[in-house]
Amino acid sequence: MEDLLGQSRIALHAFVLGELKLNGLPKRGPFSLASFLKIRPAPIASPAEVAAFIDWAELAGKGVGYVDAHLLLAARMTAGASLLTTDRNLKVQAQRFGINYQP
Picture 1: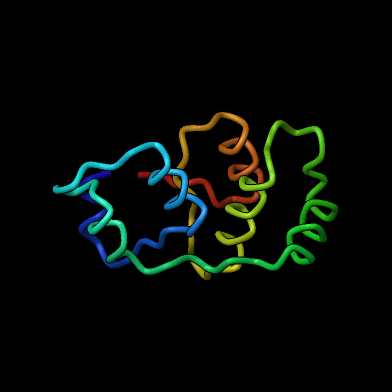
Picture 2: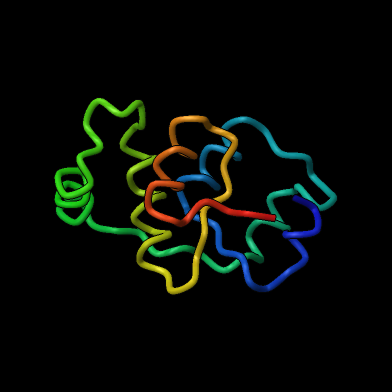
């Protein structure tokens, strides 16, 4: 992860940044808020876009949440993007769409 943070080819979704902030971030170092704020932001889909994506992708009952649906759609909205996650259900859906990060 530290290697990825130093690359300009990654994006960070605002919802992920919020979750990281709520869980506590160190004041300094590669995993500090200041470091994350330097990463370009991922696109944020509208509620209507996410609702349509949930229906189209048949995500209901698949073990992913609303934020997960946002992340999947943001990755699909970004050319050449992939999604890095350790969440099992989210990873399954990312693999389904061919957007799961492969190191």
